[in-house]
Amino acid sequence: MSKKTTGKTAPKSAAKTKTAAKAKAAVKSSKKTATKKFDFGGLSEDLLLRMHDLMVKSRVLEERVIKIYKAGEGYFWIGGPGEEAFGVPLGLLVRKGQGLEYDWMHLHYRCTPTMVALGMPMIEATRLMMNRATDPSTGGRNFAGHYCFPQWNVAPVTSPIEVQYPLACGTAHAQKRAGHKSISIVTGGDAGTAEGDFATCLVWASRKGQELPVLITVQNNGYGISTPYDGQHGETQIADRAKAFNIRSRVINGNDPVESYLAIKEEMEYIRKTGKPSFIEVKVSRLYGHSSADGANRKVELFDPVMEFEKKLLAAGILTEAEVKKVWEIYEEEGVKAQEQARGEPSPTAESVWDHVYVNNENADWRKF
Ligand SMILES: Cc1ncc(C[n+]2csc(CCOP(=O)(O)OP(=O)(O)O)c2C)c(N)n1
Image (cartoon, rainbow, N blue to C red; front, side, top):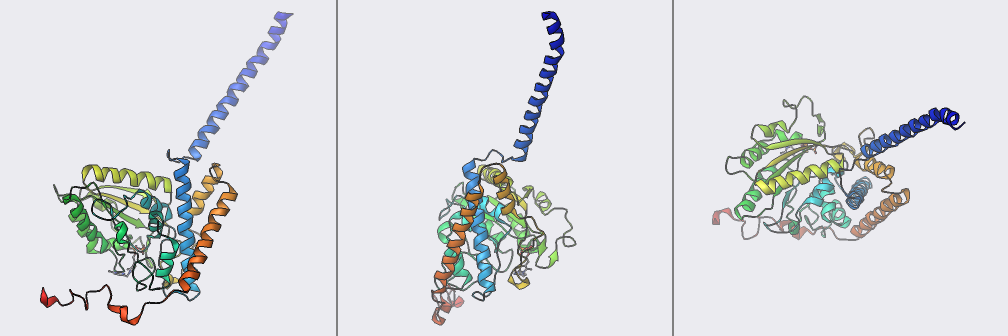
């Protein structure tokens, strides 16, 4: 009987074992898929949440200043919605401070995400957008996104494109001469790499035996105002140009904050260790067009790095819907308050027009030199 039973049950239990094994394998493979699906490159949850928070803050701020422009409370908008997944990790990884022992930043006009990650409050970008005398960057005398924060080694953002590239070699040279492990960081657009200043940077950063600690980055959004990338570039990738100068280079997906964070960290470590330059070409989205000159309207067909990262964090259970709602609300409130505050602040006076320029100060007359 028992034999019979055994005989009868044997195939059943074998089937059971088989099913269990199958189920185990299925769980294993689903776990694998889950890990693969939610691959955050080993970054801690705290860091992922911090990046999300700052990316949202930067986006809300940009959308606020666009609203200010559209409401007629500002004259011109240009900025970086779509560059958050690169700009935020960059700002978080900077050795922030004033002086040669800290990193220097030579940023372009789409750098709001980096400034937000460095700690810039919304009110400062709003004052600049609304041309208030209280604007710490320019006293209300320049375009949106043209920041200048000497206390963090953020050099003035320039409207002429690409001049920041050779300037970065200047601060990198001074940092190296002073014997610090600090580096200079430069950002700019793809079309601008056609300028001679860009080539100058590659030359000066890479001279044999005199290489400079510069992180050269190009944010490739596929356009220079209305000119598409294709047809403008003979090289396959902009990063290829670094190869001719023996500069280490790579291309990254700047729409992914995890990939950006890991790549920037690795390149910064390389530069600090070797004192040599590194080049990153960063693929990004230009979510609101070039500037207010082409309408500053949302391009819905483009990949949105903030929303996609948020979706991933939600799916992975790192964020909840309620937390997401709260983060957006907090920054929306800060943005509105900043607008209301700046509205009540003064415009620059006519008499201040010569402040901070060479004219009418002790350096005004070149004949005295
Ligand atoms: C020296 C100089 N030439 C031309 C311009 C006009 N201009 C302003 S932005 C721009 C396009 C820049 O495109 P890209 O470098 O790809 O940067 P993006 O604006 O796309 O981020 C041009 C040609 C300028 N500001 N400075």
